[in-house]
Length: 431
Image (cartoon, rainbow, N blue to C red):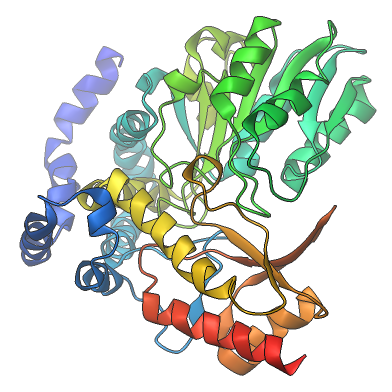
């Protein structure tokens, strides 16, 4: 950090002190949280996953609807109360003197958020920049890569549409060649998943775009093995981690992807419109930022943060979401999310005509699950769940996928999942 920035922060030390997380983390709430964690600290993550008393308390840390069962957290997740309160406080502060508090105080406080995000990802803070969502993060990489006519990019038709469209734009504009990997709806064969990508590699392949967890079905890919195969042929890898960051425990330096993008308003439960980009340090000069920077080829990760005026309260409240995440514990959170997925699937798969399209093996799935009912239109299932049972899911009709996606989060109770299973039972019996 330049001396001028350090000196400035010292000069506004009183303001910075007022913005620390401890001042926003209510002491009574913190004491209650510590008490709850102490009661389960001797248990394994898998044992904690079944402790409904603990997770009921976590649910009370949110302001979720008491009438609507929200099982579409894969789209966007609600924020815990402490995150909402942090956002509101930063927003009120910003409105006291916007250009001072946003540009001369909160703008510098982004460094703490950067460090905390890097710690979760397992990388150097100088490789992480704050973005507004996965689309923005990955667009920085896709449009910033120096590719030429004839260069090949390998990707899948199960990737996220915004990213597919970004690559198609580069194909149309720059003449690059897109090579498509086809997927089954569900796979539990890691060798076959790796082979499908490797079979598309050639001497002209420059980039592999790999979705860590397929958003449509919850299919978890053997990312580390696929990355190793790509690197062996000199291919750089972009990892779409929208559905794995703060959902599953992983280290980017073990997967060894070159680039990563994710949204923080999904599994981290950070404010809406928050995300993160990761660029391995040696690649930073090679990527031209989407928004103009003073030196687009500099080696400073902050060149991806030249967005102009944006929501500084959103960025700063990310820190409180990280604190909440760590307090629960990443391993406990992952175990609970898997448990919730297995809880409803184990019951639903016994219902006649119900088909499950997501693996229950931990190496191939997390919290996301997809189901269908023979003879019943998936769109109709989604409508019935919403209108008749006040259960919010999302219908997936994409490529060879046709079903209803269920995505619980840490505030979801098994009682709510019992309602889902009972509704599926009635729909199945009525058709």
